[in-house]
Length: 281
Image 1 (tube, rainbow, N blue to C red):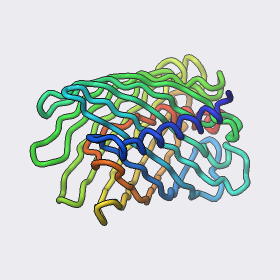
Image 2: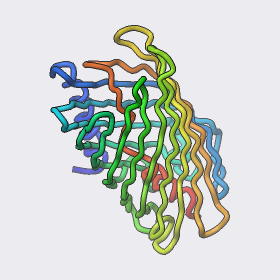
Image 3: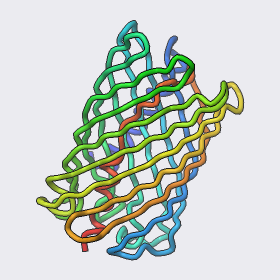
Image 4: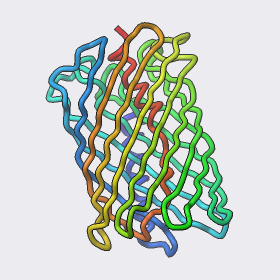
């Protein structure tokens, strides 16, 4: 099975898991879809005709079994390249993750571990490559809604030696704020750092992502979701860097109870790996 088929299968599984929440008592689950706009710069290869437009799909399912908490999630982002068929001119077109987590809930504190698969572009954007991530995480649920959370993972996304490499750490922190009964705001920061292999083995580099997401409940079964992510990818080889401002607008449909956890599988390492070929000239 090639990487593209694995990617499709993983995302389909994430959707099935999320949908199963509607059938199992006690599940928190949702499916989500929307549009994406990405405005990019690259100091190595000029990005042609930015911004680009695309879409995304996401799913989540989780259940508490006494003190044991289990959850699954997936997300895929697709960008239309306007027929360029050249990642040097456009930057990456596909990024995705699918993950699972398990842990224990003690009062308002959750502590656990997660593992996932990530998907990213190589030289040829028609054949996404596969990487992996695993790590530990924690989330403290605040008494009046919302939470504080943190994740630390080790990621490996070595798609094509010399062109798409990431071997290092990815950590993420965030604050989910319960603004009202109908509105939440999630503020997050993620730092993916590769000290071994980035453009080439022996090179170091990083991806820093700041995120802001707002969710507003329109009806009992429809949520409006809007988010902005700003990413900055740098390498120590030269003074080269990439910036990406991504705006998302979508609809989230709860299938069981509404999810209260903000924990999702980190994507920063795979986003970094997707930029390595466009930066390695």
